[in-house]
Image (cartoon, rainbow, N blue to C red; front, side, top):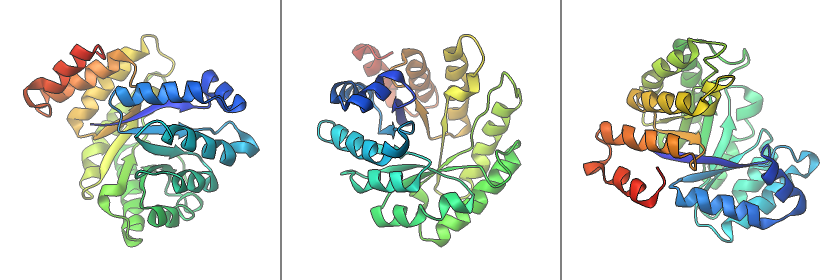
Length: 262
């Protein structure tokens, strides 16, 4: 399973303060803990920086890479910030994200090709977020054809079908789950999801997140954007991988237990 650690985000007060003070210690602590927890990527988001976002992204990427050997996921709605970030990455980067809106994908496809990045493609178009599995697939198919037409290989495409809170839209998790095999039928693409939104507005959010992730893995999801320091959700996906036969002799589960990460 591909784990993208979500904790280096300026929406979190400690990260925002570290960015403002240019204090590397909280950033490196988060990076090291998430890398130790088994992340393949760290999501890096400084989206509350306003006019300083490009400079803050440069500082974040440089600070992390000087001390931690891990792939980065450069997260911003601004293509200029994304390009600044990926241009500094020493390892293959992941871009978060594009949509099927021309204004979002057109400036980023050249960046993907220039720097040999992977990219997260959200199933959003000019009409907004889709409601059904079929609508999610239709957007993914359109984006897939655009990306393939520009020479982006399947293995660099990560679709995110966008889960919505079950507290206000009870059928949306099921629609996302049904969209996963449809999207994977396009080719050798991956499907990932941010997990925490599914439980928004509910108590015991960790329980909802953990169960959703386990079911999504069974449906074919390849990875998730999550907090890898949450022992409950880590235990859930480690257990799910063992039950689904993706963890030979359950060794990953056993090792995680021995290390105290679950």
